[in-house]
Length: 115
Length: 113
Image 1 (tube, rainbow over the protein chains, first blue to last red):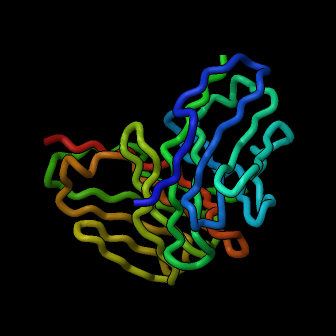
Image 2 (cartoon, rainbow over the protein chains, first blue to last red):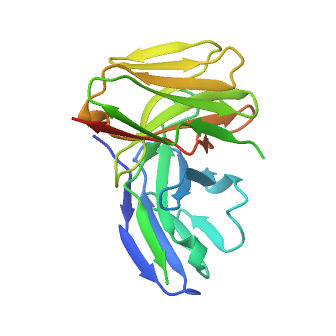
């Protein structure tokens, strides 16, 4: 079964460092998302991406965050200068198209720990 | 901002008992989805409800969408230990793009064998 893959599974970084989280969405999917989940809390939308540009972003997705699709398969989330409160599980997700079942396919997540 | 509230936060049941989680939005939703997240896992899609008053069933799971499209529920009949996990509702606003979901805080279900 096709799946969304994410790397790394866990990253530990020092406050102020840059982090890049990588995702490979399902190959025929066109819409890509980043969500985050602080430990034990709800899943929060960060950003959606379609046709090589951001479609929507939340208040959480400030200037420290950026997304990129550098090639035909990878979708990355960059945090320029990490803060302690950026510690969370970051989930990448994708959808094949608008409409249909609406199912968001989530990756296994990348756990970010900022020290 | 818009909120999606979900209760209860935790539910402990004996295997074989029923379980219900409730979701309430501060605004009318375009549709609502339900996800299950096993401990240490990622959210896995269960279902999407679109129509007012819609009821859908998946084996022992029954999902309802309220007439006003502001509330929803998930009911599990005769829980099993495999039902353990956190159940999230996630609403989508009118005019929002699919995938931009507002999640509730989830209901963590534990099942005692």
